[in-house]
Amino acid sequence: MLFISNNLYLNEQEIEFSAIRSQGAGGQNVNKVATAIHLRFDVKQSSLPDKYKELILAYSDSRITKDGIVVIKSQGSRTQEKNKEAAIARLIEFIKTATVVQKKRRATKPTKASQKRRMDSKNKRGQIKAGRGKVQI
Image 1 (cartoon, helix red, strand yellow):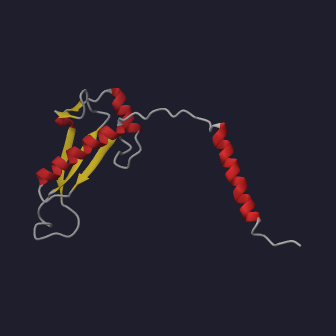
Image 2: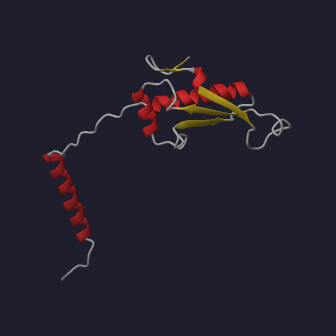
Image 3: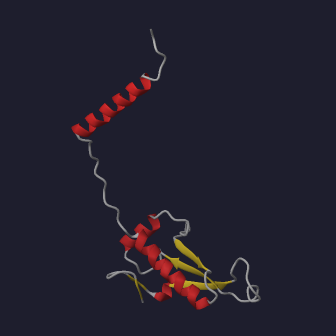
């Protein structure tokens, strides 16, 4: 069990890992050892509550495919185990950020005093600019 929050958890069997070769420059092992990890998590088939599934699928992120699968690649470490742990941590962080419900924004109006200050500063600025013009005799 992976605990995301007090009432939200994932079953580890729902996460699929595959080892791949890391990209970039490396030493003698880079071409023969698969240390990078591809984590695949199918949101639609998971045991998450429907409310959280909808929030995750509606979240705009390039890591979610059209089929509702979250793909995370981890290749920062030299070992498979550390990359696996990093990928799981990134998945948990992703789910936390995707399931945060934003507060509704209430439209507000500026106060009369702030409107007056704004118009006064605009008039003052206009007078300064008008004073830069040609002098008429």
